[in-house]
Amino acid sequence: MAAGRGAAWLSRRLGLGQGSIITGRVALLLYPGLLGRLAAGKTVVLVSGTNGKTTTSHLLAAALRSAGPTAHNLSGANMADGAVAALAAEPHARYVVLEVDELHLPRVAAAVDPAGIVLLSLTRDQLDRGAEVRTTAAKIRDVLARHPKAFVVTNADDPLTVWAAGRAARRPIWIGAGATWQGDAAICPQCGRTLDRGRGELWRCTGCRVRRPHPGWSYQASTAHGPCGRFALRLRLPGRFNAGNALMALAAAHALGVGVEKTLPAVSHLDEIGGRYAVVRHGQHTVRLLLAKNPAGWAETLTLLDRPRPLLVIVNAREADGRDTSWLWDVDFEALTARPVAAAGEHAADLGVRLSYAGLDHHTAPDPLAALALLPAGEVDVVANYTAFHQLRRRLRHDR
Image 1 (cartoon, rainbow, N blue to C red):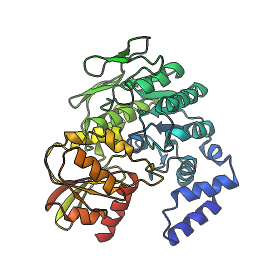
Image 2 (tube, rainbow, N blue to C red):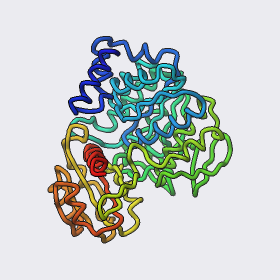
Image 3 (cartoon, rainbow, N blue to C red):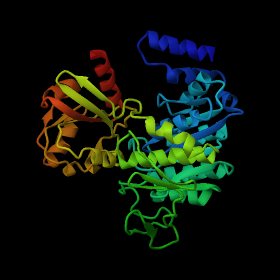
């Protein structure tokens, strides 16, 4: 750990990064069993899935802090090295909440022997290196089978997570968390036949017995239902999808014996997650920051863009984003109402072509702040994918 902290210090001094990853990476090179050593004796919950990991892990960490010291990889470093850094930063934590990339879940789960796993939803992501989504679901199913003592909180509205957890988890806790994007769940992951979608969130396979389980936790019109009864769920975080994330967090805390009456105030208080949903003043613009990195994320984000305020979209395609930008063609940009729009980022040209095919008049400028300057003064929504989002945050902080 001393070597890892030294590497992190050097990384910060050289301006290469904050050191949250290099700390764990160096430490694991010197001691491969370190993650299990640090997690020993602690109550660990892993949060995984394609979208919502960061938000849900922040909500769950806030909930568990109401019951005791909690370690959390809040920077979003969601592989084994980030988990090591989080545990080392809070050596006396009672609870541990780890956001884990779905492709790294097998390694992390094997090391920490989790008390619980929160499985959100599974969709296509990072197409240049991510597995076909059913293959990912099968790997997660194997992880759940290898940890039969762990409770599993999962989304009843996603056929892929239901298939994974329903076949492997001994203690599934079903959540009516919603699933706006259905582009990766049109067929049954069990038999390959078309799924029949009824009213609301109901779905079932036309060929086998895979179907939506009855959720033990659900949400409608600011009211949540769970084993503890009915309660008001009013969040500062926007969107129906964040209510689903909050339900996941509350259910996981409840499974650990921390009741809603204790956790709800902490969950309801959060108004931004790692800069998401933050409102920042820049020159003549008041900017609301939103992150969307794939079609499923955009499907949820579009529900927040219901007012005709100007929109800036920023897209990069670095390693952390995935090099393949073909996912832009699955985003329903046609649903956007008329408004001033600007395209920016390292792949502004690709994005501009997509917006043109959607029939949206727009400006294109690779530099995000130059693109912002092309929009009318006042409130602006900015939607960026992963590296573009964090680059813009750093620039906005610097300019302030």
